[in-house]
Image (cartoon, rainbow, N blue to C red):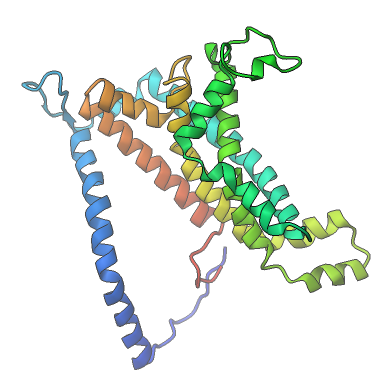
Length: 302
């Protein structure tokens, strides 16, 4: 990624006045955002530095980084982190391939384009908890239909072991959020000039060459933005796991681990520590995508 070098351009008086006006117009929104986001984050950091367990209200106090040492040396944390990374990487990779295929179909559809886009959006419009319950009951051995399909054991307990539970959770995530990925990629497809494809055809390029040398390079910003949004969302996966397994069979994610510490075990210190670590990981992912892979804010040079 190369940045423009040399002296900064001198702004005119009108440009400076427009910049000041823009900052003033944005100031109320920034103040509200800081109020609703900065305060909870700051309070979570304060709690993470204390031994605070609601089951023992008379005990506790400032313990420094002891909670972070406890969490980072716990096998539960690393198991939850491993599960979270596996779910995020596998589901986002599948969604990228399926989303790109759906986007190209919707982009090239001549008839029924509006109906196709509406139909694709249906899974994404369903509340995540409702979708998770639908997948849970579909794979339930007593009430679901999956065990009645050919080549599937009638008594297969999908949520009785770790691997099959993770497979169902990933499938539910893919089914729910692939439409979101497809819409973002479709927006990128619509920005490509059709004359480039016509020129490539004249030069003898086949369909695969047009896809790899025109479509993919020009869709790079849209692909990176879609990967960023979905990776951040997948890394905070909670609903599907909570509904299907509640973390049983070693399927806890980092969000489930934080929930169990905060709500189930009433340990605000350790729960806040997990939340702060999750926040740091999400920020790190955002920085990697925006800096390391070249995704820039609109209006900036790449």
